[in-house]
Image (cartoon, rainbow, N blue to C red; front, top):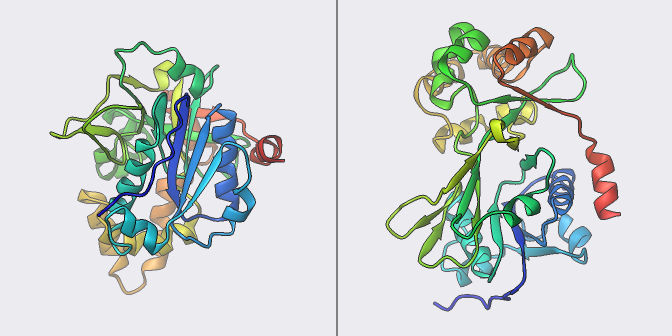
Length: 308
């Protein structure tokens, strides 16, 4: 089956790609963020081909909107009913193939990559030719009703997890104190041959993940993961995440036990609060463990600056 025609851009320093189905506000925040990171292209694959954000962004410079219609998936050789992660990898592989030069970042719409004192374009522009891929470690946004600004938890060693979570530490251990992924995301040099685009990195045909350089808190690099969007959304998505193996090990067992009970919501609310809600005392413990990252952000202002 023939592939769709590719529009090659020979001089693109940085392309950011994502596949998404999100509220318009989340889409606009994502676009504004990566335009501010000096991306030359932000390629949006809209899983809902009638997404209202397409009309808002269709004529914005440096933005490319792709409608993921059944015909689009057919041209890529995959069913529209295939598992989302499979379609995600196929779509991002398609985007990667359109880049003749520069770098490619594959991220989800709730992931914003921040670097202290420099943009992402500046970071990749300063890399030597021997660096094929850079992985940036994640930090997770927290629900902090008692504190101004935005606060994130970082990857934690076991002793940090015990101090922060107490008796809950064993179920937090597999993900190093986080609720989402621990692998981060990678920005990869364009034009590599015989590679496959995966969720967290690009890998060779024999399965080797390309990571020549890893950046994290020590290097002032943060993949800010806005994994929490409030209790109701977390509660609604919980059955799907459990069926999709979004949780594994002891944390999955705990959630299934509560969910299967006669009155699951009070127990789920308590777990959610333990997982995501940090009052000032818990934030102070994170700071003592050097597992806290703070940043003041005004997304409304950022969107106005980049998209008005």
